[in-house]
Image (cartoon, rainbow, N blue to C red):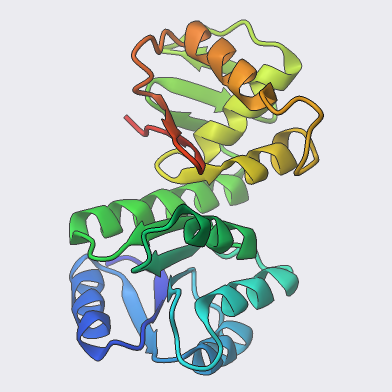
Amino acid sequence: MSSERILVVEDDRTIARFVELELAHAGYRVEKAADGTAALEILQNDPPDLVVLDLMLPGVDGLEVARQVRESGSRMPILMLTARAETKDVVSGFESGADDYLRKPFEIPELLSRIAALLKRTAHERAGQPLSASGVEVDVQARRATLDGEPLDLTAKEFDLLAYLVANAGTVIPRHKILAAVWSSDRTTDSNVIEVFVCHLRNKIGDRENTIIQTIRGVGYFFARS
């Protein structure tokens, strides 16, 4: 039985109950909230390990809940659910503090995969352990990266970008988050800087078909876990 506790914030009772049952079956401890106000009370008083947060909620919406969580200094993983298909809504979710998003309707295996990826990343960050995905292993503390056990020859910035991508493997990473984490800015004078460095990394890890580092048009990048 998993010890991780997940808060599901969803005002549709049918969806909330369905997700609750599936997560419980997968071994997670589950708590529910039907609106943003109730969610914030739980998040402030008894924070879970991860929150599955619907974008459209009565009263305080999902964007505001995510903003308040981040403003409190919490790095708790936030997986946002949205029925909206527009890229701008997905970007708004990321800007509010979401770590990943899932469009409705979704399949349970994908939901479980996204949750597992976020919890795994958080566990690695807390333990300071090497990160790994798709045959790439990154030891952040030693600043060493390998591909299938063979050392990778990387520049300092290439290493920083690879480490960030691998740390977030299995989730879609928006461009502005990459810029903030790797270049310490949400803007850059060279709008193609990320593309240039991603191209360098693809060459160095042999990702000729762009299947490991995938471009998500209009949003950012996705680093495959395997």
